[in-house]
Structure formats: structure tokens, C-alpha cells
Length: 395
Image (cartoon, rainbow, N blue to C red; front, side, top):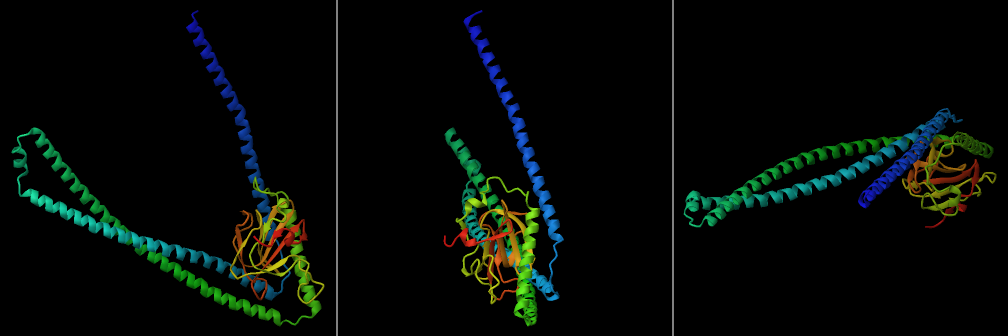
């Protein structure tokens, strides 16, 4: 066997060995990938099941409310819905106005281009008219130089082709102007519809706010002694504690997305959910009765201001609760919850995952507040924690 043949056999063996190792590696990697896929699928199914169970539990939640409080819940929930829809329509109106301006600018630019094309075609027609006074065939046949004849023929061919291109471009521009006109009319119609929808929502909102004011006046008109007021606040506190206990039992196994920072590692680094003045601090007296203490903080802010999640988490409650108004609760894993109350509207639904800093609600005064404020609280396994020990007061 020659040296060359040996080299060829050796190369074939090396290639075969490498191919075999590659296939073996692929076969070994496939089960791992399949295992990861199965684990992700199982986690998703578990999450969906737990969230479904959570929603079912929330559906059976009952609150001990008077007739006026029940009406207040319905009214403030309706106000929240109308506010949210109005905001969405306002955004659509702003976007529609921007699109309309763009379409009108486009139409103006097309009109300028059309006029320039008209001038170009006019020049082409004048040139063709002048050239038409001389017989094209006679001009070609009168040339003695064959190369000059070929150049003349190519020249006329180029001129003719350019004229056709100019006319085609002119036709396309006319079509674009026609389409832009259709788009402008359609956008104007959509914009008008959205403005009418917005006016309708605002009218309904105004009526609902008047109804809320009447309900609050009725609730405040009910004569209550100091002991009755204390009992009412204690009852509201007990209902919130009961809700949190039910949530803790329902969300023990809802997974958080991979890569999310554990809540405990964020202590002292969390931002406040909204910028504003702290009206009441954790542990301070609540109202006129020294026996009532705040288990969170109350932050005053302009009504409608966006409320942001202080940390990534899943929404486990988004509804009206007596004493807290429109309340949103986030589960951060490890038994930690953050609560956002007295909102104007809620922007996320139960089961959705929100990222740190994402908007979850807007500041309001639901739950019977006289001025817009945000109630913010942190709980660990049901126990209230001082939010200011977890959050930065600036930055």
C-alpha cells in the first residue's frame, strides 16, 4: 500500500470519527433540550392551574358591606373602568391626529412631486415636438458614419424610454395622491368617531362621579360614635387580613419568571411606587383614634398619576375592597406581597406578570377618600412591614 493511500484511509477514518462524535453529541444534547422544554411546559401548566384556582377563590370572596358601601363599590369600579377607557381613547385620538398630520404632509409632498413631474413631461413633449419637425428616418439615413448611426438610434431609444418612465412615474404619483386622499378621509372619520366616544365616556364619568359624591354624603351622614368608627376600621382591617391570608394559601406555588431578583435582595433599594408627599407613615396614628395605626404609608399625588410596581411580581388581586377602594396586590415570591390601594383605575389583571417599574394603576381616591392618595404596604406572610425600610425616599 502506497503512502498516499494510507493518508487517504487515515483521513477517512478521522472524518468518520468526527461525524460519529458530532452525532453522539447531538443525541446527548437532544434529551437535555427536551427535558428543558418539558420542564418549562410543566411550569407553565402549573402557573395556569394555580392562577385559575386563585381566580376561582377570588370569585367566591365575600365582603361584609352595607347597601351604600355596595353601591359605592359599583360606582367607583365603574369610574375606574370609564377612566381607563377614556385614557385609551385619548391615546387613540392623539395617535390619530399625528397620523392625519403625516398623511397631509405626504399628500403635500406628492403634490409637489406631481408638479415637478408635469414640468419634466412638458419638457419631454417640447423636445419631441422639435425633434418631430425633422424626419427621424431621414436623419438616420443621412449619416455616413455607421457608428454615428448606431449612436443616434441608441439616443432616441433612451429618450423614448425615459419619456415612458416619466409618464409611468406620473401615473403612480397620481395613484398615490388618490390613495392619500382616501386615507385622510378615513382617518378623519375614525378620529371623529373616537372624539365622540371620548365625549360619551366623559359624560358618563361625570354622572358616575356625581353619584359617588352622593353615596359618600350618605355614608358620612350616618351618625357614628367613636366606637362605631373604630369598629368599622377594625372590620376593614380584618377583611384585608383575611384576603391576604387567602392569597398566601392560594399562591404558595405560583412560580416567578426565571432570572427575577429575589425580593429580599432588593431591601433598601426599592423605589417608591409614586412620587409625592408622605402623608402618613407606618405605625403612625390613623385618624382621631390613637388605637388605630397605619400598617403602610399614604402618599399624596396628583389624581391619575401612574403607580409603578416596586418590584417584579404577579398580580394576585385587582378589585375593590372595603376600606382600600380599588386595590392591586402583587406577589413577589417568598411570601412577600406589595399592596397599592385607593386607586383611580387598575391597569393589570389577576395572573399577569409585571416587571419592576411597570405601571399597574393610577392614583385616585376610591374607598371613600376625600383627596387623591396612594396606600402602599408590604407584607411578609401576612405581617405588615415598614415600606420605608425597603424603599429609597429619593432617586
